[in-house]
Image (tube, rainbow over all chains, first blue to last red; front, side, top):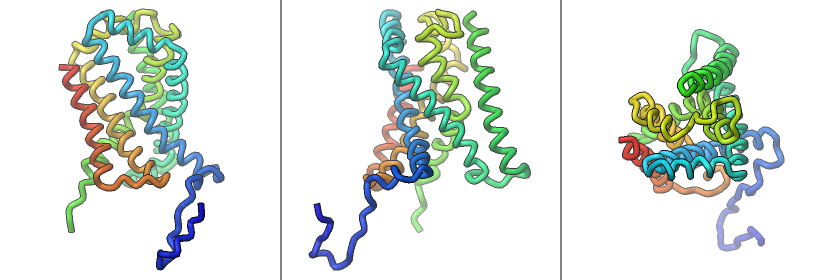
Length: 132
Length: 114
């Protein structure tokens, strides 16, 4: 379809829909920003679990069974990598998004990544300890 | 100048982004991969009894509420701007619809945890 509209007095520029596909930097930007969709969906899966838990044991076991289905395994594997990418970028841009600190930008980024690693191990160990 | 409503939405965005960055990967791994597939953790990690005990504990309640509410409020603001990036301009009404959805999810989690 032609974008030529003779009734317009000035030429209106429209950004093409695929502006982010051809540039790796912009593609990474889009992956980073759309990670938010999977983060919201993950929260909704948890809310659904919370609802089922309130409904009783049979209902909760139904939620657990749904999580074992190939669809939700795939959903969580993809979400895991996308959320991990969110973690990576969150601390990578942190020197630019927060107020200046006395420590250097490299230390902020590396410190953030180290915190993710420590917290991940701690949460696994604490969970294991609570249910063992 | 009219006072901006942005800080009200950006504060939970920042808190949720930080929470998702620090705890997101391990939480998704536990609830979505390790427990369903029986990896690493005991088979009854998320059994009915264990989850009931967790949701009846004040700290457990706060953890679940923080994760559901802040993940959603983080994501909805970011999604609103992502729609703008691909040419879907939702305007001020759309912004409140997204934020309102986040608040609804938060309210639902609170009601379920009470």
